[in-house]
Image 1 (cartoon, rainbow, N blue to C red):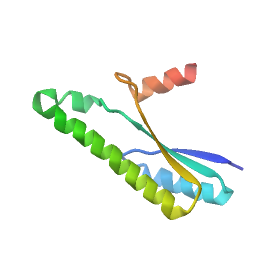
Image 2 (tube, one colour):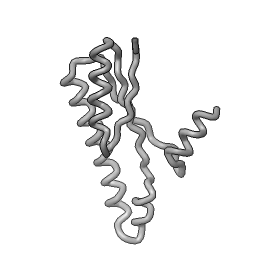
Image 3 (cartoon, one colour):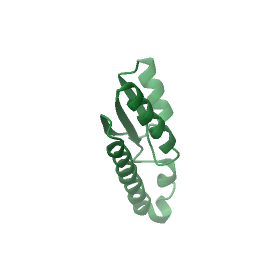
Image 4 (cartoon, one colour):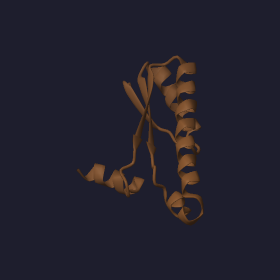
Length: 105
């Protein structure tokens, strides 16, 4: 049986993964960690520099806060042993590159 379940969450389409993780945690009496990796310098924000870069970065922050709020609400409502963790993606790195570096080390 699982003792600890890790679920990746984000602004798009992660509610189903979180709901499944919560259900599995409940079934196996495991703890759950919801991990949100935040890209504070996404390509689409950087490409908006000539227009309104500040607005794009504010939008990134608002998305991160919304993900945290929704995730914590789901965990609290489920009454499981769960936590939310947010980490920033290192500057200038993509999720794929960070993951491959982590796997190869």
